[in-house]
Image (cartoon, rainbow, N blue to C red; front, side, top):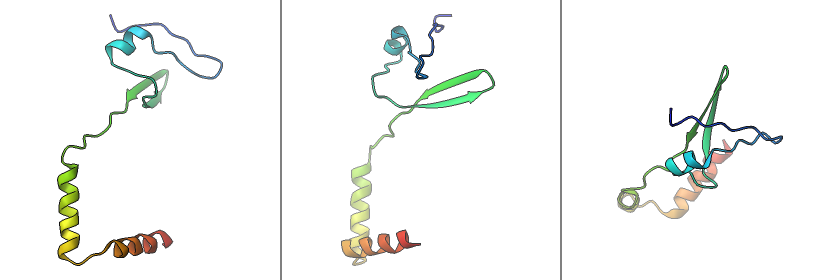
Amino acid sequence: MKNVEITSVSSRGQIVIPQRLRDRMKIHAGEKFVVIGEDNTIVLRKLEMPSFNGIDKLLKKTRDFAKERGIKESDAEEAIKQTRKK
């Protein structure tokens, strides 16, 4: 069982992920995790940033859609204000 390491909890509730696991799993300072607790088991799952591949194409389509329909930036801002009031 190469994936088993021993660690402890600090007085502030912090847990150190052993260096060997951090290296192998490419975990760096500041990364975020989801923490799931069930019975006597705690699972940490690293949050991955979603891929932004194609975001430029999506933004262009959105801008073209708005331009074709004569939607101005001020129209969008007003719609946002109205939605936030609800």
